[in-house]
Amino acid sequence: MNKKIAIIGAGFSGTATTVHLLRRHGHAPFEVILINRHANLARGVAYGTHSPWHLLNVPAGRMSLFPDREHDFLEFARNTDGSITASDFVRRSLYGEYLHTRLDQAAAAAGQARLNVVTGEVIALRLDRDGAVLDLSDGGTLYADRVVLAVGHYPPIDPPVPDHGVLAGTNYVRDPWAPGALDHIPLHQPVLLLGTGLTMVDVALDLDQRGYRGTLMALSRHGLLPQAHRTLREMPQLEPPAELLAGAASARAYLHTVRAAVAASAQHGRDWRDVIGALRPVTPALWQTLTKNERRRFLRHLQAYWDSHRHRTAPISAQRLTQLLAQGMLTVDAGRLLELRPVADDIQVDWQPRGKSRTEHWRGAALINCTGPESRLRCLADPLIRGMLAGGLLTADALELGVAADAEGALLDNAGQPSCVVYYTGPLLRARDWECTAVPELRLAALRLADRLAGTW
Image (cartoon, rainbow, N blue to C red):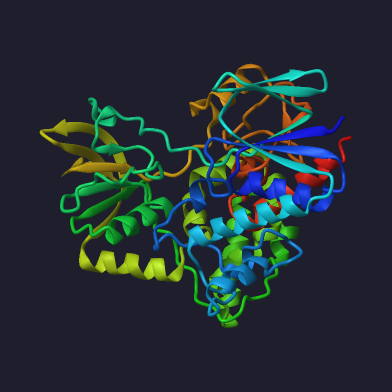
């Protein structure tokens, strides 16, 4: 009897795991059941957008699905536009097309393996014999010998402040990525963007492309904007600072070493981005070396600065954002949200500027939550996640950054034991690796998991 592998979620991680299974192990007789809530495969939140301003945040030359074929996506993109180079930042929708194409090709070229696509929502999972039974929202059930949770980014949660009914109103947008979420935003009235990271940049540029001519205020605790990528003719070869790998494992020591490496690089005409980029392959090891208290110290004092330098925006996006700032259409403030209240048809926001004791007031037509994906499992409304938590099949890490999993993605149960049936791949591996949100990291996690799954029987 052929083995069945159920993959829940068909965004990047679910698609990548499926493709690697079919390409590398398709000679064996097994079935991949790829389950997605909607029929639009291989897109997920990131690549389902069609806005021309929503660009990849990684150059095309580093976006291949295959670690051993670095220019695979670049070659695909050049079939659309021959002028695209390895250092270009292209439309995310084009990358969605690439993933879907490679999925179709892998399914067609597989030997004895088969792909079965199921449109539906898994609402519960229970272990049965040596596998698992999946309950679907339509009342159906599926059996699988192995299960991969490839769920990605969850919508942000509501801000934890008194809101007097504002958060239940029509002029509050909790999830800016939901279909039609921005369609009813007034184009000539003030709008508050809660958060100043990459989601805020996407929303601001999307509104600008729609013809928005009001004033946008972006508010976050630190008021830090994402730094910009450079425009490069060729991709630099990067090496991590040797002192970082040999030095003390503490947040303070890491900070001092990285700063010293940036200063040394500047003396030789190198850019600070090269130092940050060189950390990419060693970041998981550095993170795992830190104690829980040191990780907590990093999160409290350094995360906001790390995020703004590590998760950069495409040069053309940064240029347009700079124009919006110069035109006064966008302002950025650092502070803490205190309270929300309805005023006529508007929202009033009470907030406290960073480092100040006074309270400021803002009034406008809409509030858009741009704080980014929620990773605290206990805060998620997903019935599958909630049920697995309650049943002890899934646990959160101690700092609530994501799921607890072993080195190859097996979920740890509430006794700390790795599952032989249920695995995870995707951005919630942040708990284990810290950096697991971009394609260069996610593709490796998916590849390792595909090989492990194929070797479990």
